[in-house]
Length: 264
Image (tube, rainbow, N blue to C red; front, side, top):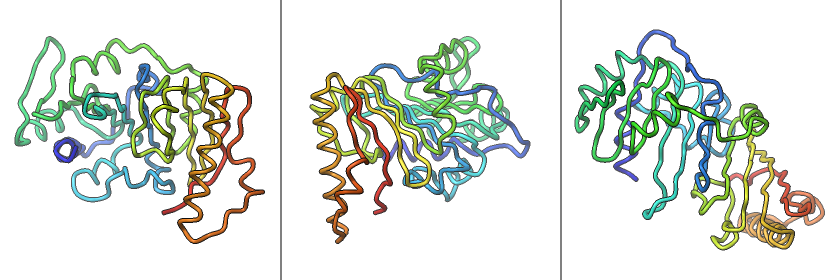
């Protein structure tokens, strides 16, 4: 993962002209079953617990300055997760593809028909269109999925909700959860999740987790409450059980979430 992050760091320096993504709700073309999607509205991210995912120094800091939205697609693999991403913002094809990536150590130019990108041992990257930078282990496939042959997988009502949040997390039938999520859930319980939608603004998180049964929903509520109480106690505070009663609730096979994420 460290080599992957280092490779991404050489990708993302923008040109001086102001460009915008040609896509609306770019993340809606992601969301294959089992994948976990995290999309971040960059101008709102600083006030959330996900701020650490947004770099502030060096070339990656230039991404934070130039991007309007960063979307990460965590796809389960034998080694944990493969990460692909969409960076939308001030990205020039001529500068990023022809200059930055062309001169970046370890990256080689690849042309497959009309698709042009640069490839390294750990990641492929390229500007698919002005304002749209893609990075992924398999650029041609991701390019078609996200851009040239895109079909929206995330239902429009959910995609619209995701657009309003500083950070939105979505998954259809997740197999496991990335460590970046503020939820500690055993794998055998994750297997019982049908859908996750979490919306984060500041340190407040709201959302719904659809489970496979009412029993699974009640079990998840108990797990989440116990983890929150453990966190509060670890910070030397005494839990207010009355105020915690409505933080996690079950409604049939759904778990409803509305709480403030404890700051570390």
